[in-house]
Amino acid sequence: MNKDFDIKNLIRDNVAGLLPYSSARDEFKSTGQEMVFLDANENPFDNAHNRYPDPQQKALKNRIAELKNSHQNQILLGNGSDEVLDLIFRAFCEPRRDNIITLPPTYGMYNVLADINAIQKREVLLTENFELKENDILEKADEQSKILFICSPNNPTGNTFQAEKIEFLLDNFKGFIVIDEAYADFSSEESWLKSINKYPNLIVTQTLSKAYGMAGIRLGMCFASTEIIAVLNKIKPPYNVNKLTQEKALERLHEQKAVGNEIAKIKRSRGFLAKALKEVAFVQKIYPTEANFILAKVDNAEKRYNELKEKGIVVRNRDNQPLCRNCLRFTVGTKSENKKLITALSEIQ
Ligand SMILES: *Cc1c(COP(=O)(O)O)cnc(C)c1O
Image (tube, rainbow, N blue to C red; front, side, top):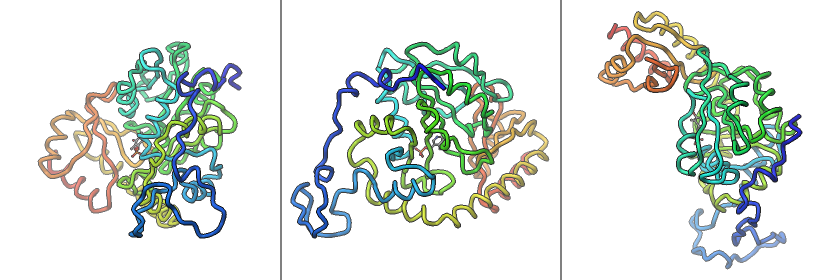
């Protein structure tokens, strides 16, 4: 257990003193009878969208709690995980004083958000095999290190990290550890959600953008202790998840079977694609993946990226990321998209 961890020492001073903004709909408590709503300056003519959405997204959180075996007060929802991550920065990191630690090569958004919020970035590279350097991470940290971002499965490398190493960090890192599980549904490893009651400094983020096929509606999820969620709730915009998103997300979260089938198909295709990529002469290495993409080292990433683009296929060139020299990231597509990719790769050999 992390004995030194006390959330009170980690909240920004101005946030600690805040009361949550109370919107018209927050203050109203239902008495069960049919009410006349003249409190929020809405247009009264019903077009299904004239009312403000539920600021606490109760119906949606209820379903998520049920699916994830969690509790409403341990869940915060946002306009994509990007908003959730931004809220975490703004709740805990004091601009121009605090720092965060990221583990490149990883998701670029952590550093973007650090820059926007004027938070110093500290980086500890993964090993050549994309493993965590847990001791180096602790050495890099100081009193002002508020957040450590661990993306697992990691984007763009695709691997997960050893549970023992993550546990070691949860026990010893003095700030929050955000485990970004955007790709967890594609992974054979267990989610860290089960551990939020055990580790007071653990924050798990997930999203409907990847496995659930809902990138367009923007719904990010954050799971953490009730104390952490209460702080985030104080600073979130009151209506940050719009009504259309709440409805569509709820609908999708009742289609578990369809979602499961799609995930199974994507995982099967991932296997086929990995095999096909291995046959390509200019592909030098395929990295193991637990996500819906494959990172591959080629002879010349820039050249191969452009050749694929000429053939109408866009992949992600990760050459400029540390440890990813000449690496391309291939998202697993539909069967026919994957076939097009494989054909194009064989034509440019
Ligand atoms: C795609 C992705 C997300 C998703 O962000 P949303 O804002 O929810 O769409 C989060 N983290 C990582 C590592 C990702 O690759």
